[in-house]
Every structure is written in C-alpha cells, then in structure tokens.
Image 1 (tube, rainbow, N blue to C red):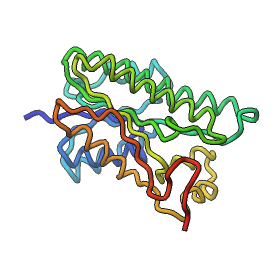
Image 2 (cartoon, one colour; image 1 turned 90 degrees about the vertical axis):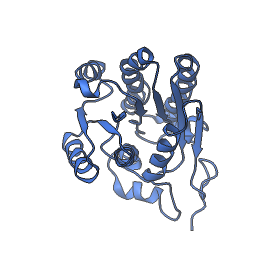
Image 3 (tube, one colour; image 1 turned 45 degrees about the vertical axis):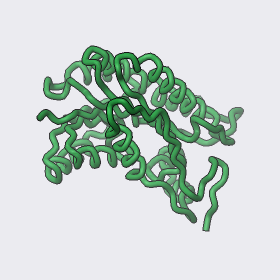
Image 4 (cartoon, one colour; image 1 turned 135 degrees about the horizontal axis):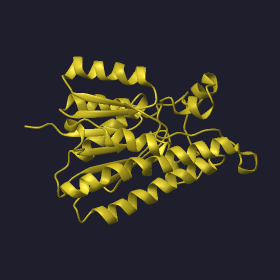
Amino acid sequence: MNKKIAFITGATAGIGEATAYLLAKNGYNLVLCGRREERLKALQSKLSADFGAESHTACFDIRNKESVQTAIENLPESFKNIDVLVNNAGLASGLATIDKGDLADWETMIDTNVKGLLYVSRQIIPGMVERKSGYIVNISSIAGKEVYANGNVYCSTKFAVDALNKAMRIELSAHPIRVTGIYPGAVETEFSIVRFHGDEERAKAVYQGFDSLLASDIADAIYYVISTPPHVNINELVIMPTAQPVPGIIHRK
C-alpha cells in the first residue's frame, strides 16, 4: 500500500517540525520545506532513523515565487502526488503601533504569511483537483480572529489567511478537497524570537508564568483533522492555552 505524502512548509522548527515527527510516526512520507538546509537534512535523517519514513527536502524561501515553482515542479516522481498540504510557514516581525511600524517588517510578514502561502498553494492545488483528492491545512492564528494592540499588520496577514481558508473551502469542496484552518493562541516556539529580531530574553518573557501551548499540541490537531473520514471536514479549530481566554489576557502564576 502506498504511503500518503504530506507537504509541510516551515518544517525546520516549531509546529512544522512537530507535525513532521507525528506524521512520519503515523506512516506518512514527507516533503520537508524550509530555508535552513542543515535543519532539513537533520530532520530527514531523524525521521528515517526513528520511523523509516521517506522524505524529500526542499530548501527554498516561500516568498520567492520562482523558487517555489522550481522546487515543486522538480519534486521526484514518488513525491509529486501530494495528499496533504500543511501551509505552516509564517512569522511575526516587530511589535509596534501602526504609526511607528517598520516597512521592512510589514513587507516580510505580507510576503511570507499571505503571498508565500498563495505561491505554494497555487502550485499544489491543481494536482489535487486533477486527482479529486487532497487535504489542505492552513495555519493561521488567533490573530486571524481577533486584533490586538501593536499586532496590526501581523493580524491583517492572519485575517487574510482566514479569508483564504474560507475561499478554498468554498471553491475546492466540489472536487472534493478538504480544507481546515487552525488558529492557535500562544505557542512556545521560535515565534517570539523571530518577532523580536533575535532578542531571546524578551521572547522568553512572553511565555513565562503560564502553561503555553506546545508545538506538539498543534501537530496533534493537524493529525486529527486529516485523519477524519472523507465525508468529514473540520472547517476551523481555535486552540488556546487554558490561561489565555483571548489574545490580550493571560493569567500568569
């Protein structure tokens, strides 16, 4: 029996890496995408050693549409028929009021969170349509449901992911391709380190005093939705730490 193939963007850390582990453990072969080749190769070796999973590494920046097209068009034949696309790659850059926002930060978030997701999806969806089968999981954020102070452009990009998730669901359901949006609250990954441009002390403080979500929690949710029967579509999952009822409130110990 042929194993299913999952294509995971942002696989070098956090939710993407945790998802790769869980899917490999459960019999998937993987296309691992990211910008850090050494991490991709290390993950590939780990998945092979621990689970016997076959994987292909694709090192590219999803912001570059030519790189996305080249990487996906040149996938080995055994990895071309993608069953599951996990649009996970995304980031926040900076935390400032809109009048003081850094334009480079804005462009990085828009290019990664919105355009990058579109570039990858545009390359993979036609194959799913042709085969009349597939599952797409779009990782948004609670910031795609509720706006918080100083999150202006980041929230805007995640609202865009929410809109794209709904559009995909409408447009692809007839084929029938399933689509799920996942909207996590605070997850302790490299997210805040990236947001604060490498300031690890500031990033660490974000997660102190409460039990945040873990990358593995979101990987569990991804595996759950893609494992449901073909007649079931989980449209959306909003997942929050118990201590965080909304973006602006965290009950710290």
